[in-house]
Image (cartoon, rainbow, N blue to C red; front, side, top):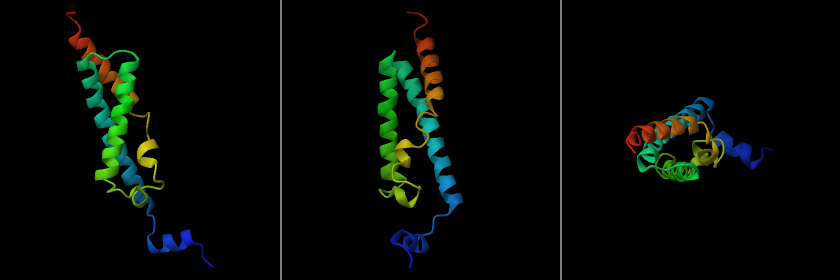
Length: 112
């Protein structure tokens, strides 16, 4: 006899290619927004922990927006786990954030 999860998988099968595509889309959105938020942090003149706090807040905000808009409030339908939107590839975009952050900060604080 099939368990309830096995029955659910027969009704709504998980296609690996679609899950991989959704993960790649999530990674693309995170990388793009982290570069934009890095430039914003540099323009705002944030330094030290305030910049990383800005990154954490913005990443959480983007994850929430992805949860509401792209996943339409049901992330289990598009990802393996419900929390993948918030935890998948969390620190991958951090180097691009730091690069844009330091670049924008250096360009704007040259004449200080």
